[in-house]
Figure 1: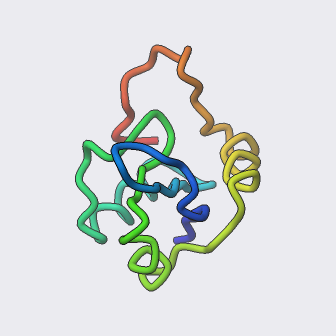
Figure 2 (figure 1 turned 60 degrees about the horizontal axis):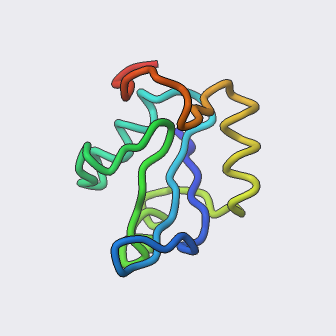
Length: 94
């Protein structure tokens, strides 16, 4: 299982955030997030929002550090990228 995380450089709600993604399936991503104790509400369209204070936890759990640009490239390459205009509900399986 390989999931990826970008640096915590996205501001919101008074803190900085990272994006946790898979390049294989949403199932893989949901499993990794659940094993980390990330709540399901942190899932947004095609990624989990991870607060900066949990970044090191994700890396210790096995997430591979990549750039934000690489996160988008991985999602697009896997066919898992979902834009805001995509009206499909939040997936729970691939």
